[in-house]
Length: 136
Image 1 (cartoon, rainbow, N blue to C red):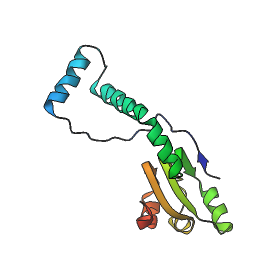
Image 2: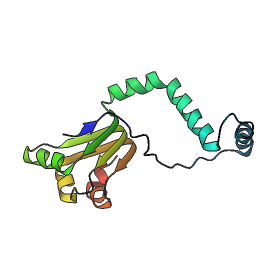
Image 3: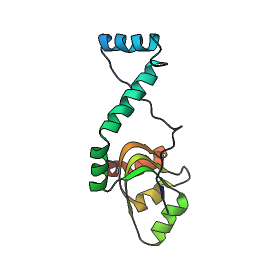
Image 4: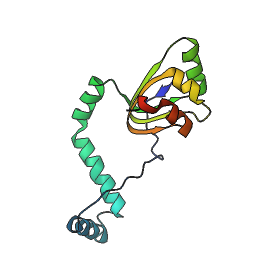
């Protein structure tokens, strides 16, 4: 059925971060001095360090909330099998959840009971619209 496990490193999400001028100046100084190659390199490193420091809290919360850690993909065939078996799925992912582009909205609505994704949820606009309030 659905795959789970690893996050695809080449797929990233763009975010916007507001940083005060003094902190930005400090980052620029570290970049100028060669400690980091770019502002982005500094920010990614800072985020990774903070996530590493919080690893045990993240791990216990993932277990408590029964989240899939990494990625989970649902193909048309996966969802058709669920529909045929009279099953529905609750998508609960920390990372990336995807629904294949060839999944029609009615199939998604019939088989996906809820979507809770901490990270990114990728599906066609039509599927997202069909799931509407089921997406947390």
